[in-house]
Image 1 (cartoon, rainbow, N blue to C red):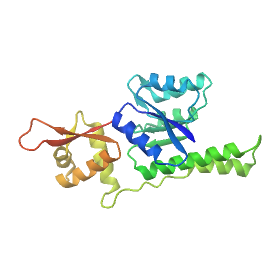
Image 2 (image 1 turned 180 degrees about the horizontal axis):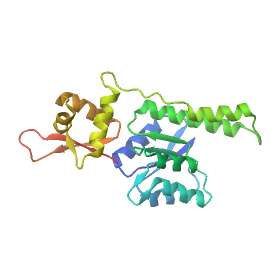
Image 3 (image 1 turned 90 degrees about the vertical axis):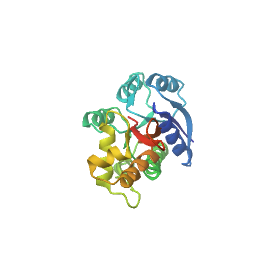
Image 4 (image 1 turned 45 degrees about the horizontal axis):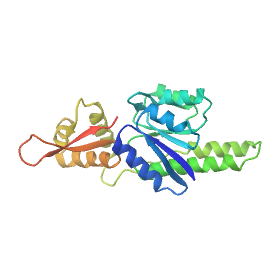
Length: 224
């Protein structure tokens, strides 16, 4: 079994990713950490095979966590799972040997595909002897670099999903479907469908907004 440490400061997101891990044969959740310090402490025992590492943590950046691990000689495999897309962060992740970089939002199919690729890569490494042929090396690298085909639910458009994601991500506070719909020129129903998809994939959190007349309205907040 591949023992996995889930690192994310959002409880709902961490729980969702842990549940994803449990659904994939050959993987098990070894623990959940909500801070950089907790992650480093959990890894001190050396019983973790893979870290699912968020980049933005309340007490440090994921890159710094990876850098500290490498400085102490810890070569645990790391998959970055984050909404951070800045090329400097991606470059830093690659330089520290982070084997996969998974950008939110994503669903279980995308997550499972990444972990299946990682498991295949790990299996090939473990099956190799003290040396490898060029074709074996190419095969191992190809296993990790296979492009991910992200499946968007029927009825949702990729461009609109990106627009809604960007709006919520840059908002100063939680937003409602109406507050998203008006500036993006969408209907309230359409905006809510996209927001609900983002909530279901753990990218945003949903909560009732009280203090308004009638039934409480739902509001959505970016988790990063």
